[in-house]
Image 1 (tube, one colour):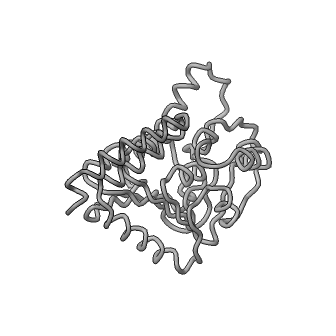
Image 2: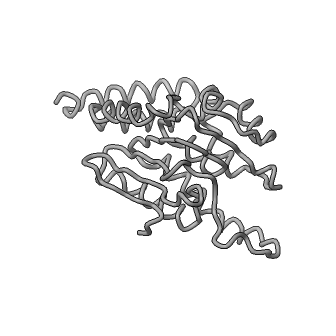
Image 3: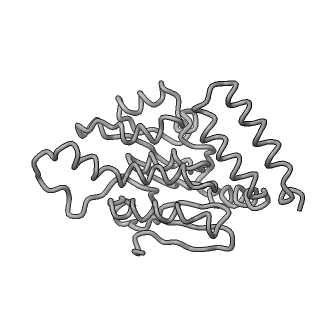
Length: 243
């Protein structure tokens, strides 16, 4: 495991920190693969994950060592294979059965904006900034859009994509990118409050709630109701909820 991602087991909490503050916590493909592996294993040891960035930013996007060297356009299959590490990282946020709490204190741009959206709960400082800048770099951003498609409304998604605007935390809240906005000086207090609530919640209930949120959106209405009925009866009958 590299020191570019710090992992601390704090009792039932897995604290994961993107650790390239000198580069705005830009994430390389290797880091994205490492992050996916961390999240895929997280449920073995932890009740939930707290994800944040070191320093003043959350994550300012993808990072390529030494910059991107000029190259001929890759073949479609080669490009698809190269991009799979990012799609797999996004998938890990959805796959892990435990909640992921994101903490955004500064910039969350591109890949960072996608990660902030993918967290199950995201607490942002009122100084946080969000952007999908890809169109401004002549990149068609369906990769990032795939992370946001079940997180934000269509109008908000298309505005973020086409305008490439940098939006503040309150606008991000209204778009559905974040769950709560607090003054910068109160960010840690807000995080601790959510952590305390998650620690009190029975693990079968937190996992089932995430499963329902992940699956029900792709169901028709009656299917979503029936799934809720079955989960409600199954999970609430568990002895783990009566401890």
